[in-house]
Length: 167
Image (cartoon, rainbow, N blue to C red; front, side, top):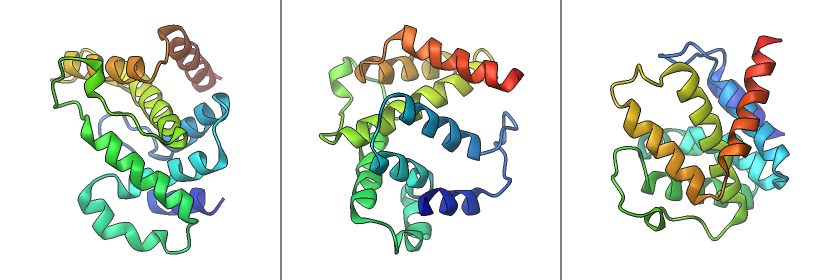
C-alpha cells in the first residue's frame, strides 16, 4: 500500500520524545485495530496518512505527498483531520454530544483506532507522570465513549498489544 510506504519513509526510524517508542508503532497498531473492527481499505490507507496532514502546518508542508493518492483516501484523511481537531484535550466539554463524529464510517473507524492506540500509549508511558494526566485520561475516555467503544473492548486490545511487546 503506497500510503504505508509514504508514512514509513516520512517517519523513518524516528521515536517519540517522551516514551522512546518508534513513531511507526502508532500506524502499525492502528492498522491492527482497524483490521480487528473490520474497517475498509480506504480507512486503513487514510489512517496511514493522517499524521502527515494532522495540523495546519503539517498540511501546508506535506500536502505534496498526496499527489498520487486515491481521491477517497484523501477525503477520509481530510475529514479525519477536521473531526479530530475539533475536540483536542485542551477543550472542555459539558456533554459527549459536543464531540462531533463524522458522517463517514471510515473516518469514525480511524478515530477509534487512533484513540485506542493513543490511550494505550498514554496509560503505559504517561499516566500519573504527565502534567495534564487527569485531563488526558478523561479526554481519551470521552472519545471512546462517544465512539461507542466499551471499556472491555479497549482493555482487550490493550492486553493484546502489551502481550505482543513482552513476546
